[in-house]
Image (cartoon, rainbow, N blue to C red; front, side, top):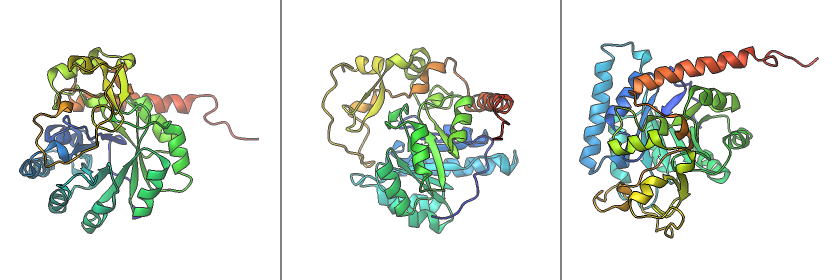
Length: 325
């Protein structure tokens, strides 16, 4: 594992790469706000669109450096599907080598295919993991960090307690940990860092953002839904994911009687048209506190205020400075 200094960020937050939601506008807004802006490469189809997106992001950040301090810009991150069914992986890696995102997060497969390419230009590779076995394999493969997807995460989710997962990983791994799962406010960020994580993944909080690619009806559903409106099912994509029940019902699916899990297939070379997952919407357990539409910058401002308040509260608790006698 390569040793890295901490990412220079206003807050230790990744605007998580969300399928069909995260695009260049959201990535640039997140970076300009001082956090990591990320997107999944499968969002850009065909491959020519991925080239255009990466061009837009790198040129946008270059322009931003002319108007704001370079050290106030967060890095951008590409989320790469390394599952064996992704026939476009080689082409995606060619563009990653060309545009050099500082961070690459691999998902649904081993990080190994990306490591040589990303390390060659000095970037870092984090592996998306949902259990201890996958975490150990990713570390053995040479990942610089782990993106731990825990219970409460939206989309393809995990099942482990974030506190237990981080503690278990810290038994054998000193590298970077990104922790995701139901974190939607500054207090959650503070809690994750206190538990041993270096950064947090925050997705659902950004779905209603002005810069999000989510349809307006999806944004409205996020604002009006609660924890009780979520269900976990593998019946849509073949992998357990956290879905909005009202969205499933609108698409003729019964949340109480979901279909059997289809064969997993994550090929970014296929067209979006005709896919049943296009109109079903995901969300994580942070959903209950999101009630207004804001820009990414406004969301980060609010998170920073909440984070500072949480840290002050921790520092002023009566046991915060207590030492053993």
